[in-house]
Amino acid sequence: MSLPIVPQKTYIIVFFSLIGLTLLTTGVAFIDLGPFNTVVALAIAFSKMLLVVLFFMGVRYSGGLVRIVIVAGIFWLALLIALTTSDYHTRSWTPVPDQWSTTAPPTHP
Amino acid sequence: MAHQFENLEQQQDADALGIWLFLVTEIMFFGGLFAAYAIYRWLYFAAFEGGSHILDIRLGATNTIVLLGSSLTMALSVRSAQTGNRRALIGFLIATMILGGAFLFIKGVEYDQKFVEHVVPSLDWAPEGDALAKLAPGGLDHAQIYFFFYFAMTGLHAIHMIIGMALLLWLVLKARKNSFTPHYFAPVEVVGLYWHFVDIVWIFLFPLLYLIGGRY
Image (tube, rainbow over all chains, first blue to last red; front, side, top):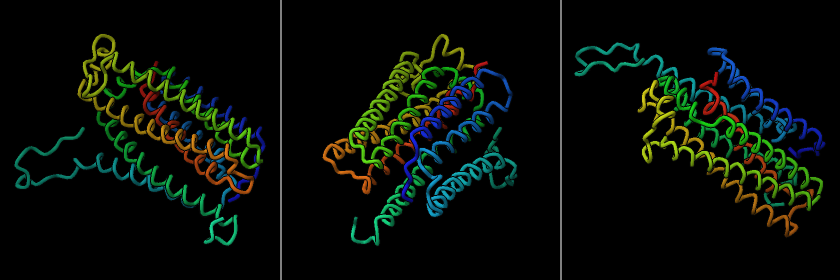
């Protein structure tokens, strides 16, 4: 790893970009974009995360091993969220044979 | 340098890998809450929208900026350690602690408001007036779940901040005893990575809790 000494200016530019993105995401919340409000808010949050990870945490300068660990962590989180939500979205599609359930089948919206 | 390492560079690599593995476990720790949030927001969409309208977007945005500022001073602390500037190191570490304290203070003000508005789940749940008007369309029981998420997620985040501030204090004391050199500053770097991680959690909590309901 051994992080090189990054010029102070770089950190300050990253900081002001983060502030700009914060103001942008707050401003967008006041405009009606329909479902895209959520998409924009999450896209901005993701860009802010990248700025922090790459510059403040110095991953831009770190080796392959650390990068693999981070990507694996994010991938695992994506699996957790994707599989859990897909389960909740699809579970009520599975018909339950009448003789298996004594009560009414569970209803999900 | 510890005896099990070939050289200093290898030791630094091992330190970085260790803290990153810890941070991945933290991703999964918070990830469980984020996944649960995603499901309940989908199930009780209107209630979550109403709940987010109760939160003060100005305080949330201010806190985001305060925390980003603390990440900047943390990054500059590590840089000062690299260049061997002890006075700047101590100064930036203390600045990080002050900004962290400011964040927790603002969070405390927000928590207090929730008690004033009686929107604390279980403990003080009796929304009335304006709050009731915002929460009623989504169903009060479901709105209560939103506030469970609000307190669980911001509370867990605040606990991480408190631990981070204790670690910063430890670094200040060590730096005063002249423990860090441009060749050995791993504790500063490791605490820095932890601090930035806690910042990233907030970067996602802010839109998910405050913004996603929309204010138009």
